[in-house]
Image 1 (cartoon, one colour):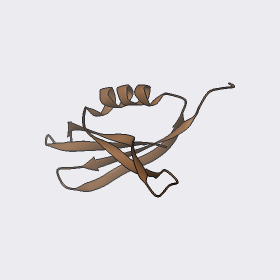
Image 2 (tube, rainbow, N blue to C red):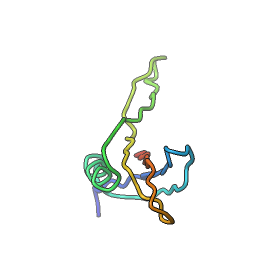
Image 3 (cartoon, one colour):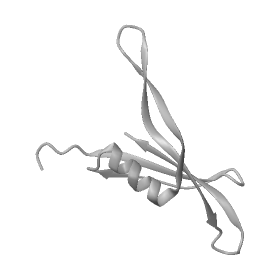
Length: 93
């Protein structure tokens, strides 16, 4: 549809309890950053941080822009009754 903006969203899932990344994917969406944030919060838990990128302004200075968020929740392992802390890093391109 004319006028719609599509953007790529990268999702990286980390077992923060043991310190390793276990899943990652990139997909395209026509959702706004606000809609992406609301969906991610409902799916991946509370937001614990924003992610930032420095953007060159062309005059030798940089501006800092939000490029994503980090979400966190407790998740049960699929093969036992123990839980781990899942962090999900969402980057909007």
